[in-house]
Image (cartoon, one colour):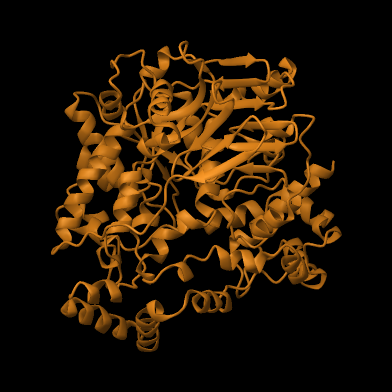
Length: 623
């Protein structure tokens, strides 16, 4: 995890060194190993280094290739490094950095190079021959890339603040994105809360040419893809474990010992287990494992953490997290120019600070397992198309026992869906949109085109088989990039790169190729993980069906004095974003400290949180 930034003036106007220095200062926290810049007339690139691989310790960025004059700045870890070295005819050495491999790939394959790269990356290459800036982002959006385009050219950076501190960048609120926050419906993968600052969408590259034209192209698409169908569930498990070993192996390449987060769920337990086995093979100790424990709370997963620790003979650093500590939300906003971080992230403060202080540069995570392998239960077509009538009947009978009316309705929808015209599917999806919170103004939502936008980002009307609805959502909606960008920004503060093997492109593509019944079968989510062939899990976790629920931290956060002050100011009432009558009722409830705030029917903690967070952020901008 490093920081990248840069400026390109196609008009030929030279880049002012003071402008690049401002961006460097705003990005410096991402690079404890130093910040370097490159300026040549009307183009400038910068890099703040956090070395997280052995090769990066010898690396200086921006890197210029002397023969071609091409220059790259990259926040990247390339996982198929050895394969690319062979294909490009390069000599592998400790001095050959991942950014150099990216540059050589661009020189060989041009814009097609993105398809050849596995790993987490965001980079920008200045091509003096073509007089163009070529930028790209990994397929899922682990690494952030923000940019601002105007008649003067393009500015880009890992974080928004580096752009907003430039005098030419206008601070105009993007109400379309405000609507997404207030309804907790993150849809767009390109917009930000600032109207003229955009994100490069995951799986896309961007070219800025000498005429100041910006062209954005998708290089990775989620389907259609070749389907994989095995006879036994254990075959899916074996295939997955082969890919998983490669994904974990790529992410334990680090210039320090590896740390890992262990929650006690299936995903993080598998990551810790595989990392431990691979490191032991290399003759080194397993990962330094961290587990958050919540004594006395329903979300405490200590017994599952203990089961993994016992199986692998691990010493887990248990972080006592049951006492909520109010983060410095005002400081966060001043640092990022964004609303306060969600409680489900800031509750990890003590853990990641400990990881950073102990000198670890990378932390393994189980993020992504839920998204790829939970399954939807809509496997009817998968089973019938593969001629698995017996399994189809078993599945349907199980659903009838659970809820007869719902089972019949679900079967009818699944069987008829492929026969419907895409426009009819879209209309049906729009009719079934979940209603927004009552305090958000419908007039405001209509004005910014929220309902049309929500329908556009619904994956269902694009599919003929509803069995993949859940696993496709991260590639269509903006919630997943939002979460990954938040985690990146959050961990950058302590100099730790957040790595998840489940986000490996090979793993994601595999999840799209297997049928839904391999992921969800008769009430069991992540069904293929529960096969006896999965040797990574202790029995207690293999049989686990529940998940920890952390609404406690939302309640605690909303009760903090900083948000009581926000409520007392009643900031959003001055805007057109809310329904005054409904907001009056919500504010009255939030002001009542005895008893503690309770949700009403149809509400959820995320919506309440983002209402207060946006109010605090709006107040911050108006100061």
